[in-house]
Image 1 (cartoon, rainbow, N blue to C red):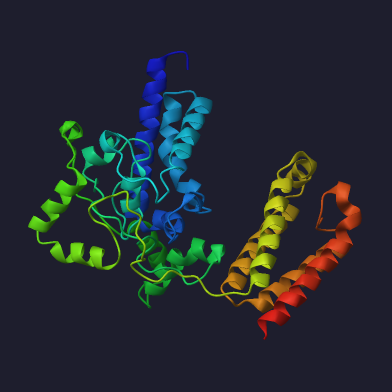
Image 2 (tube, rainbow, N blue to C red; image 1 turned 180 degrees about the vertical axis):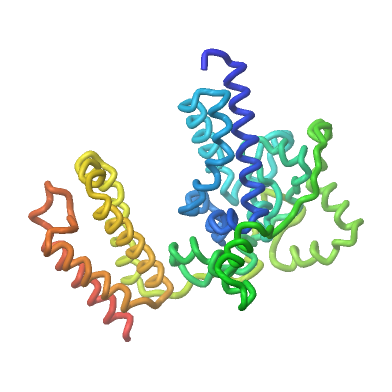
Length: 366
């Protein structure tokens, strides 16, 4: 990339590719099944930016492949990562309206509207101009603490979050439909549809201020929605005022502190185990033993699902099974619990983990 013209062209091409991927991910059921994981969070914060579907890259990569025909693939990958990195900061409820910057860039204000159900608008990555040109732009007119899916999950299980939409599609398919019909329904049907619009001149038109947009909505007969916003503790007069009351109850089951601590410890172990598997010590071994790699990956997924169920206040038997499998794998020297430099601590750590689970289980039975 020895020309700034090429750099700018790749920046625009990457951002446009993301816009179309994001828009299609909302329109088609098979893409939404992966992307809905990101929209399942009810708390709009930086952690939500990290909540991504495990299978989303399988569809998003299709939109970036054409870039390799015109630009250097390594540089195109770098632009893709920079595009993703920009989108981290816009997942916050603190930043309000940013004035003239709202005309050009995707901001926290624009993205909050995107995460408010149904959320079929404001698909941009960096530049909001794509939404303004293609008719999918919607400005934030009032602050609402209302995020997530139209029907929120009632579980913290990440595995279920990745398969929930596909499972619902299967359940909703006609009873007499065969496997092929169910797959066709999943792959070939839309969940929403946008009217085709292309208006480049819209980019140069000034955006209405939040106050002007509210007045326009009221003239269109939306006074009831505005009153509901004020009744729920929102301040429609300022986009910098953080709502104090949620529009609907958020899923947050009451749990003992011991259960939360136990899940946090196990999550850190599973995360460290995953990082270690990709390191130089285990990387070569995994490449020559795909069966072992698959077993480790499935077990890691099972661990995360179990922690999610424990945070729901159930799934104790799943955790008991997990510990039995873990003990058997460690004793048979099939699954390393700790790195080689800490192998002498393996059995004390395993005993401590089992003892902690006994304490957590007994405290939950009271």
